Image 1 (cartoon, rainbow, N blue to C red):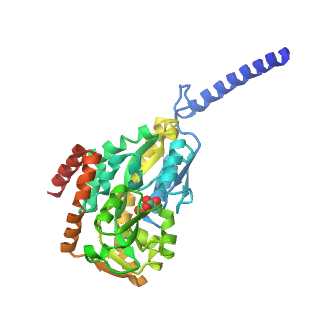
Image 2: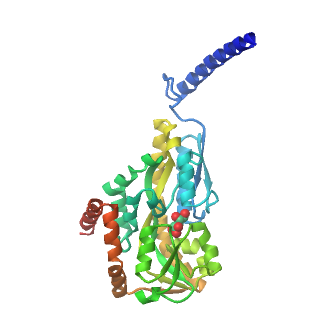
Image 3: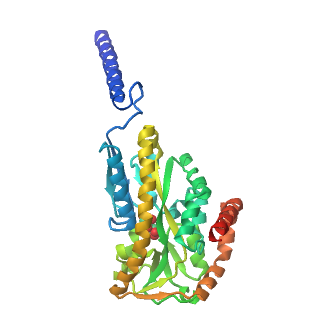
Length: 350
Ligand code: TK8
């Protein structure tokens, strides 16, 4: 017994020396002169999953990210892409990042509000007039401040991408005025601001994960839903919905998330590749998203879904009606933060 233990010890010592030697050689390759494994670029497989389809602007952005990362890393960092919520919905994938079983996801910020309440300021309906206003806030000090809240939740936020302006579809009638919301059973994201805002408008909001929406519409579990045009097209909601009203009631972003556990295992060089690629692919993604918003409208017209605009006057009435909801949540999310956002917005729209 004793002998075996001693032999085992010797073997372990030799193995450890061998491993130390090997790892020193490995890191010498790219950067030279350090004992840390955390250097240069290693061969890695990075699992990246999203809720939307490959043909959606978010899917196209993810493919661009993959292309950039693989090119910049000389093929060492490989991004494996998973579309259409095959790895789960936004919340499930975010949890997988926290536990370290998935490396990347790009959820809407809205379902993350249960975790980081301040993200809820982006859910305020009728907040942004243009996508460029949203860019300025998201890429400015406010957006940055919110990304800085992520590490304490075992997440790293690299950039904001665009989901876009949301519009309501349903199977009952066109929405022209506030009264048309009355009694409509609408699927919303799992987000308190959206739920309260639709209640205020008289609808009956039903929060649910994104991947369940098509079936819920088809089986008439809900009358309608709201999403940007690109999603209404890509997810073929026009097959199970008769009316599309261009309410543009809220702009919601995506946030590019990396598992902190994974991030901390990367070398600064690898981190930089991912950081730069998330921003660069994000610029491309926003461009595609804005083009697609226009293209999708034309294509949706051909599907036979009945489309209507909402007049400025009615739009303002809707915005006025949900104001108490915004006031309530401004207090909850932090009035300083909200005021800072409004004053930034004022500067931009001048
Ligand atoms: C996709 C979601 C989706 C969002 C929603 O994962 O849930 O309605 O707009 O696009 O993030």
